[in-house]
Length: 353
Ligand code: SF4
Image (tube, rainbow, N blue to C red; front, top):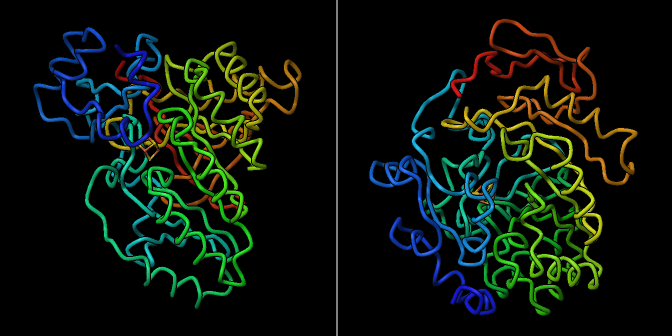
């Protein structure tokens, strides 16, 4: 039954998303903790595509999308908006943190919701509908050259809407680079149709794809990425470092080599942001540095991403390669960003689990 479901088109996958405990139990037997989480109030949006639900027999993947009681706990230093994006909100759809780059939150919808999402304050919630004010803002700010369209997941938008959004941005002469952040190839690979590829190609879009484990590289996902590559779409990956899910050398090697084979360049290995309810997902920064060093010199340089920590509060991404870049003060890790400003990341020595 599940085999044939995954062969249906992407709109069927979205229309048949699993969004209740009862529906999920048609795919997988839940633990007592998972059942209890559904019976209580779930603070983060929950939904999984049938395609991804069929991969949840893999223990690493199930932890990333099925609610547990841990997400109700507010850990030390955790925030609803850990990167301070709301402080830089320029319009209902734009976050303008760096002079030459703007984040365009085009949708708050995702086909599948990750339990560690940095934007869990927004995803799955209602959003403003018209983009016009945002286009005007970008037109007026000629210092902006780079637009990152994110969300939510922009590739869940219908072809005409996406085409219109990209066309409008391409009409603005100072916009040189357009990127889209998406997890669609992993969770909804049937969305990667020939028509979508043509739209992305026409507007010369780079894709920044979210993958966390090689178990996500299903035959359908591999075919989707190869199709994008055949259409000349540049692809890089972003992987969130997650405790007990991908925080060991071999798991990362399998993922990064697997991505290279489908023409996705491993780009960022991200320290998990201290979003509320994420303590059980976060690996220590010391371990992150140890892991990235274990990859250097061991696998092809092309397969090694940058390990980065997003400075809480909006200090930008800081690449970490050595312990000399950080120092510990109690339960915090302190480090400098590219401007030499000091930032603090909550990294308790004694995690709750
Ligand atoms: S796909 Fe991205 S935006 Fe959507 S829930 Fe996952 S991390 Fe958040």
